[in-house]
Length: 118
Image (cartoon, rainbow, N blue to C red; front, side, top):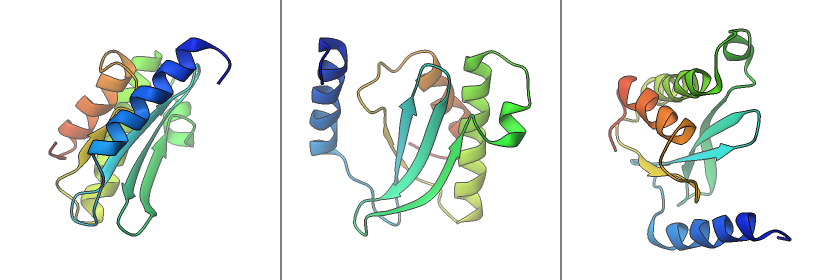
């Protein structure tokens, strides 16, 4: 962690992770935001398994020429659909140290629209 912005985010991320953890019944919905793409995963921390994942690099999402916020919402809807197929209704949202704003919020809104509760 050379620059202070990423190390500050890392500290926030660890602080959040101390408090929350996902189970098989209510997995953790974690978000990773890069400059160009956004990724979402459903993680069962009790067994240490990723249950489902979605990203803006998937063919159906990346094919759409839309702004990053709209693609983020599509990622949220995609992870919500996958969770519903697996029978998961309730999740614990993990913003991974990012501010709950913009693309991170769009993923959360898309997941809520797809039927997830958190």
